[in-house]
Image (cartoon, rainbow, N blue to C red; front, side):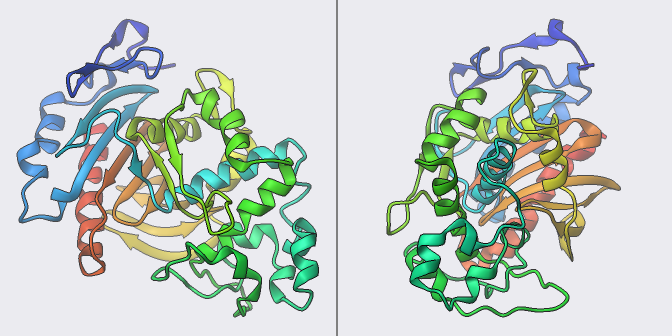
Length: 347
């Protein structure tokens, strides 16, 4: 049962515009068990925009508790309507689309190979080792593709089948945007049309997401590895839907089984990110522990975070300007530190 109930509903004024009730049900932090003064202190513009700290690149923070929007903040020139680049958080959205396509029978199995899923492309490169990579391996980042975190993959898709693989036994996690870019033509072939149209019909419209932008690769496919731009509150919708077992306002948008399967550990990594420890990988989602609680994370370059804390019915979204490579680690840690303070308030 949602804490506070419908009687707790209010409107949250943000940037001179009231939250649209049809867009997000809003409630006061106190009605959902969070100290408003403490939250105001954490998110105070004077603290966020202090140029001596990496937080000054933060542009949006959205906090959701028990399905209610309890706070959203925008900094510098960002506002409630600003579309922000979510970088590799796009990968987690792609995972959702794969789960829906699988449930609809448009994809038969995660054990299908690239050669089976893209037979026309495979026929043009019959000796490519990529043809034997399974969809599950792509989702787990264990396909054998080389790590390309520091590479520009915008024009790579036409040449993905030419990339030499580095297979390992047991499987090794390597971050490959090139591999995930293959999901775009895989989905397009499976659904028999545009991936964007599919996403709009089965995911975006059911959640009331009607304002977005999606970059395309060199051959015109939307980029499933990166490239989505969303409003912060719309990314929060996607995260809350996952937190609620694939439901949005009582409607099952994503199968609950896929939500559970895609956000559990499939490959061990043992990373840490600020207050998150024991970070492992699911199907294009990260899992970990924060303050003794299991967390689920969609993570994009430059502290683009959508953090889900299931045991607290809590979602925190942050979107920021991307820093240079030298500042990346510091920015990631500082923004995640701010997120950890919000989680602590909810504990």
